[in-house]
Length: 391
Length: 161
Ligand SMILES: NC(=O)c1ccc[n+]([C@@H]2O[C@H](COP(=O)([O-])OP(=O)(O)OC[C@H]3O[C@@H](n4cnc5c(N)ncnc54)[C@H](O)[C@@H]3O)[C@@H](O)[C@H]2O)c1
Ligand SMILES: [Zn+2]
Ligand SMILES: [Zn+2]
Image 1 (tube, rainbow over the protein chains, first blue to last red):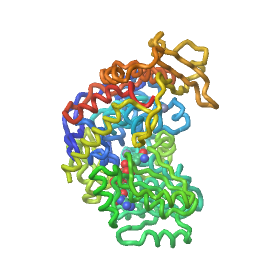
Image 2 (cartoon, rainbow over the protein chains, first blue to last red):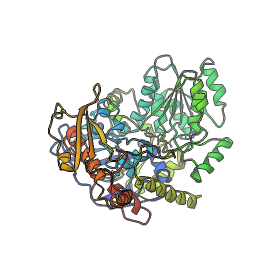
Image 3 (cartoon, protein in one colour):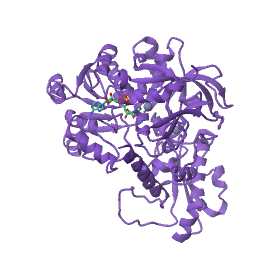
Image 4 (cartoon, rainbow over the protein chains, first blue to last red):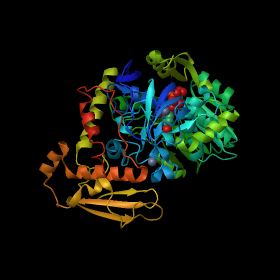
């Protein structure tokens, strides 16, 4: 079959690879209909997560049709239209039973790498390096889905492929940030990053009853999108004074919940950008935490900061003083999609959650390397490139 | 910049692998305090068995039973709702560090077998199956990814467990 392969740092190709095979009785094989780029892939592409091998298939946000099920699969049959959570989770370990699905004890077939780096191993993720299980990704004609009853969700007829696709990764990630960040009625919520993840977090905050939701980025097209489709306020950090605006818009208190949806390749206009870039390239820090620093600084006393952006290892100049003295709560997680996807599909069916505007560029899988170039460099207003392997 | 990124990739990969292949201690990778290692140590994990499949009086679950007389095993209830703790220790006593290191690189360290058996027993008890990696692989072996391939072949046999 055809697949998009990681060939080395910033090198991609579309090539033939062997078809996936059933490896476990709880597996399903899915024919991929749509598969999207995600900001997380950029960290792999740029070589910031050094556990990729030449020939690894990228992609983890996808929707498709079941073409084969193992004898232990009960919920799905051949022909089902399913959206699949980007994380591989067993659904039965203690973490899964606590609904902390991305922390699954059993979903990663290579637990040793992350145990040594982080202390304990989270679950697996499709197309996300050998540190997270080495599972082949979804930018391919077919993909193997382990624990299919847990991770694949039948899409209701009323929800289009275009909308349901983002129930795989961007929407549950955003929802988790607002939910576990503790957003409640009356809150002022600030979201750093207006990519697919930040936009979904902002929309979740609105639906969870926040009084005001403010999304921060520098790309005018992304901010306009957020105003139009999510009904939230915006701030352009290149042209507006973020600190002053957040104070004015929150009665001088500061945002109650700050959600960081930028991650380890954060950008900035200030001198800290150069500082972090140099340190990162020299491997003196692995991640640039610029938006995370800002979220902590601007958060109100006693407020909550949630990190949705992916960080790999070490950061520098981390404002522990602000965190401690302001009594903040800091949390982060890879997404616990299994917990939210059925509810998100319901909201999609009711029209409360729209996502299709994120798919700014749809193309055949053959054009995926160009699609990543557009997505990475934000060319032509690209927010998510979506590939259709059958086209 | 691209060359720098590539060089960094290789250096960091190498460091991570070196760390990976070094004996696993209980401190994090950035701490330097001397290890006070007790050998042989208990390898312990907690299982959340389906129904009452495992109790402190159960016979040993399959992959652990396969370790036979070479190990001591303890099964005990974890506090509150946390399941059952499985603890396994090599019975022979301490190994000399030199041969232990060599056996480990060759994938013949009994502690590796203990880790794999524990993880597989846990998966069988919780999900009824041992999760296999994708196959056939789509990757190629290159000079850069050879060490990573070696490390992932030991994926369930290494780590802090
Ligand atoms: N936790 C999870 O499970 C999970 C899931 C998916 C993605 N992610 C992570 O979420 C992050 C965002 O993903 P995405 O797909 O939306 O990526 P994206 O690249 O489309 O969007 C990131 C946005 O952040 C903006 N940005 C950069 N620096 C900023 C700054 N200092 N302040 C404000 N905005 C800034 C960029 O302009 C861009 O619009 C990534 O780190 C990704 O890895 C996490
Ligand atoms: Zn993602
Ligand atoms: Zn689990």
